[in-house]
Structure formats: structure tokens, C-alpha cells
Image 1 (tube, rainbow, N blue to C red):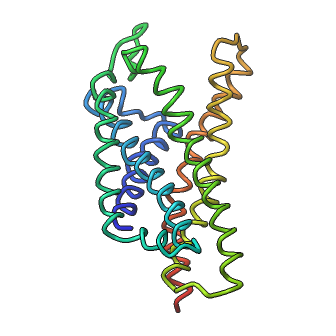
Image 2: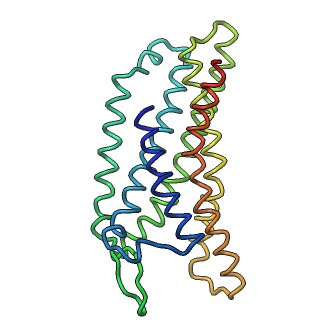
Image 3: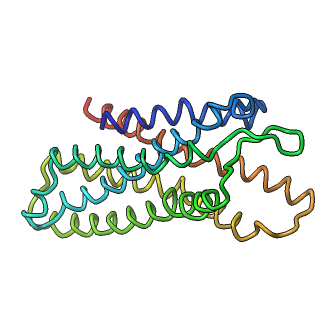
Length: 240
């Protein structure tokens, strides 16, 4: 939980704050500082993808905690969780190394732009990272295991009651499942639309509307990171 809180806080302070400055005040530090250009999105991606991985693992953990199988429930423990957290962080840090290499501040048409200089890697990020890792895969995983968890809860509640820890784990996981599904659905739809219409000729009005939608779609997915703090606040209030 501590690691997840740190990751979410970093994304909100660094990612959302700079997004607001760029979108609302046209202040983009990636266009004036090369180091910031090469590192900003890379570190945000490490934190963001790690968070989504943990949400998926949390959904799987809730499924295991609610399982009728004693052997499966016993596999949900702190020791394995620590290994998974460390392994997740290491994997996504290694995954983002090419971004720090290929992302650069360059001059295009007399104007500075912070872009990925490798075409293949840019396509990989657009088609796989943005569409699959950040959106589609987490939604599919948490939806499947969320559904299975609810089925387990309905079955087991007839014969026995859950422990307080199991109830807490399951309720937190289900809350995150709803948050990710709600906040990421719009971004997923927008990403798919952008890929499909990438080569379509658009007039000024169409581009203006798309720019407005893009600003909304880029900011709205920060919701799951905020919802985690609301969940903690609600849980704390419910104890009093």
C-alpha cells in the first residue's frame, strides 16, 4: 500500500501538475529543457504502468482471497506480494530504458518539439503501450477477476463469513476495478479513434474539436490515482 501511495502521489504531483500547466497555461517545460523532455514521460510511465500492474495483481489477489479453495487462499501472502512489487518495479524500469534514449528535444520547422526520434519505438509506444498496456489489458484483467471475485463472494457468503482482512482486500480491489473501468474507458476509446483516423484529412473545425477532446482524454485517466486516496479516506471515516 505504501509503494502504491508513493507512485500515485508522484503521478499526481509531476504528471497532472505539468499537464495542467501545458494545457491550461501553455507552459511546457519539455520544450525548453532537454533533460526534462527525456525523463518526464518515462518516469511517469514507470509509475503509471506499475500502478496498473498492481491494480491487476490486487484484482487477482481479491479473487484468491475469496476462493473456496484453501490452497489458493494461502498463496495470497505478504512475502509473495513483496517479490511481485519489486519484480514489477524492476521490469518496468528496464522496459522504459529505450524511452530515455530515443526521446529528445529537436527543432522541427523552426520550433522545438519533444518527440521520439526512433520511428519503430514510437509506433510501439502508440500501438502497444498506449492501447494495450495502459488501457485494454488492465481493463480486461480486472474485469475478469472482478467478475470471478463477485461470484466467489455470492457463493461463499451462503456458507461462511469473510474475515475482516479479506473483506477489506476484496472491497479495495472492487473499488479500484470500478475506478479504472470508468476513468480509462474514455481514454481507450480516444486512443483507438486516434489510431484509426491518423491518416484522415481533417478540416480546422474537426481538429479544434479533437484538440478539446484530447485534452479531456489526457487528463481524465488520472482519476484512478486520485480515487486511491479517496478510498483510504472513506475507509478511515467508516471506522469512526
